[in-house]
Amino acid sequence: MITEYSYLGEANKFAYAFQMGTRPQSLTGLVDSPVGLAAFMIDHDWKSHALKARAFAGIKEGLTRDDILDNISLFWFTSTAISAARLYWENTVAGNSFFAVKGVKLPVAVSVFPDEMYVAPKSWIKKAYPNLIHYNKLPKGGHFAAWEQPEFMTSEIRTAFKSLR
Image (cartoon, rainbow, N blue to C red; front, side, top):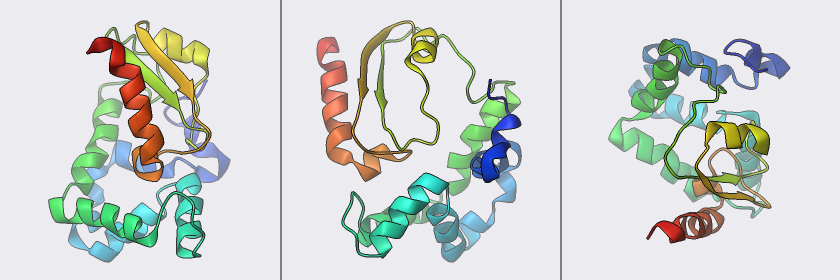
């Protein structure tokens, strides 16, 4: 079972989440420096870092350099890097594990993107979301799926919630 602190293994693949979950306000460089924010967002996690590196290498696959700059600009101009980090802290302060089953009873749709940092097993998803109305595995996409694969994400949202219209 992955716990709050055991996810720091595997070459600190989730170190950003630990930092955001324990000391989000110490990330003030994210709101004081556009270069600091860009560095943090480009090196956010190992899987999306590889996707961004391919974009900077000129490989057309999901993201462009402009997409990356747009995303960084969105956080910079709205000054929301710290408030985005606080979600991790609020979850930690509440005593919840990032990966704990929470038993959400609202209708929930889950789209599994293969390059997500942690792909939850369907058995866990069914426990966490007893009112699961849609489940699908996608061929590509990761932690920032709406940004990386907007067509897949749009299609998933439309399909998932069509029955609730």
